[in-house]
Image 1 (cartoon, one colour):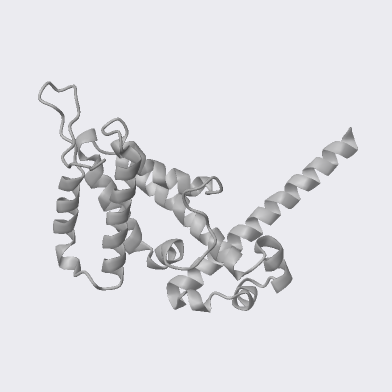
Image 2: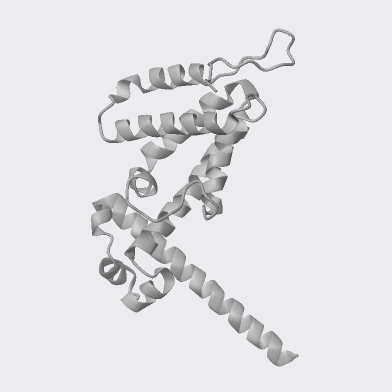
Length: 211
C-alpha cells in the first residue's frame, strides 16, 4: 500500500513537472513572438531561451508547428474567457456590442497571439469532430448571443465572427484607420441586433437572412 502511494506521488510530481515545462515553453514562444515575430520562434531559439534541450521540446510538442498550435489553442481559451466576461458583465440588450468590443480589444492587445490563432498555417482543426474544446468554447460565446433569437443562430454566429475577424485583421494590417473603429462597431452591432416584438415576448430579427 505504501509503495503504491509513493508511486502515485512520484507520477503526480512528474506530471506537474511536465505541465510546468510545457507552460514555460509556450510562454517563451509567446514572449519571443510579441517582441520579434513568429519567424524567430524556432526550436533552437526556444532551447537557448529556457535552457531545455531540443529533444525535450520535441518530446512535448513533436515539432515547431506543434508548439505554435499549442500557443494558438491557448489563445482561443483566453479569447473565449474574454468574450464570456464581456457577454456576462452587461445587460442582455447590450451584449452584442460588449462582445464585439471585447473581441476587437483582445485582437488589438495581443497582435502576435491573434496572428498565430488565425493567420499562420497550422493543422488545428476548425468546425469538425476533432476541433479542440478551447476553440468550441470561444465559438460558444457567439452562439450564446443569438441562441433562441433565430433558427439560424449558428450561421449568424459565423457571420458575426467573420465580420469581427475582418475588422480586426484589416485594422492590424493598417488597412482600416483606427479613427473610425467605434463607428464600425456601432454599425456592425446594428446589423446583428435583434429587437423584441411589440408584445415583449417574441424576438424579431433586425436583418433578413435568406434560406
